[in-house]
Image 1 (cartoon, rainbow over the protein chains, first blue to last red):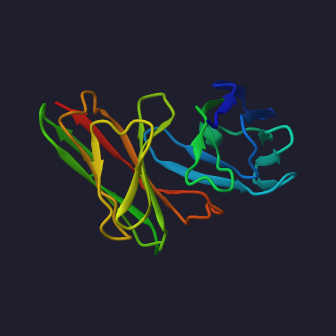
Image 2 (cartoon, chains in turn green, orange):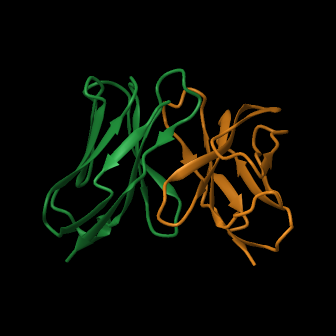
Length: 111
Length: 113
């Protein structure tokens, strides 16, 4: 059974600082997805990583995938308040019919 | 514009009542999914469907039922057998290859009164 773990579960950081959210998964997978959820809202797709070594960047967020280590990271550069949200990663190996989600990381950016 | 629409946004259920949540997509996606999210928690899969007239149970299917009579529609019924239905329900759709991941609807917040 595929398991996806994120850490930390809660992260409080100051504006302007850098930090990384980690996503580990238990079985071989070449595909990893990142989503953002604002309080009371649905999930919004951030990144889709489809191969080992894939790196994608959007604004202050950068995601990468290391399939050998079964690890994806979401790096936040010079955090701003607007990035406060819960971030989910999800894994979906080829042949799987559905994604398995991590427990989420609740990120709070403090002015 | 293509998208995935859930309705209603808020729903109140009395004890012993069945209620149906609507999910419609015009993205030409093959697969559709229902997830439940409890406050401060992650997503748990209820049911999913890869093709019309076929669906599979997820991790927490008890007390729920679905149908997939059309490619565009995947309604979820929360039955009276579901003892703790208060939650945020999310519908998603995708192509079968999952190369773009899921597109989520805006969600339905169900409360038992």
